[in-house]
Image (cartoon, rainbow, N blue to C red; front, side, top):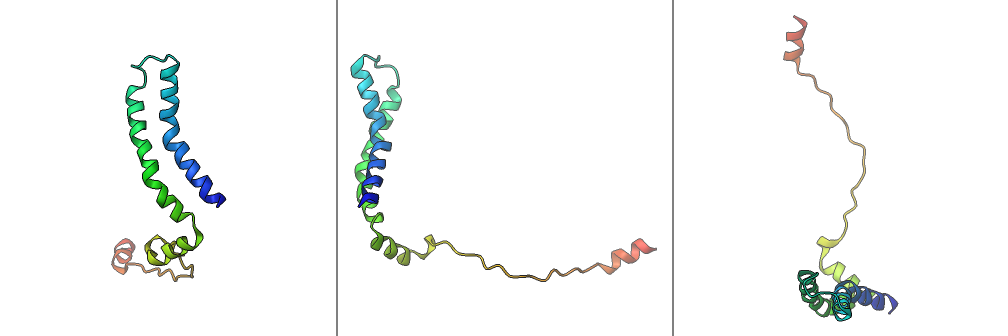
Length: 101
């Protein structure tokens, strides 16, 4: 439950706080022409927090995480098998014969 709380909190802090800080600065007397584009972008991105919250909740549950990994095997890491390999050294005989002459 703590992981779920921390992940949702991080999502909201990351997506909602920048627009809240700029809005507070505007109310404190910051001119409206400063950071107008940034404020509009951040207020747009704050809607993603509401959209992504169910997915964050679902992925923070361990039993759903294991089901997700079994349903989508492409997301699993594949371990590379390490084995000795023979290195074949072949020499082109025609090139060596031309050099020797």
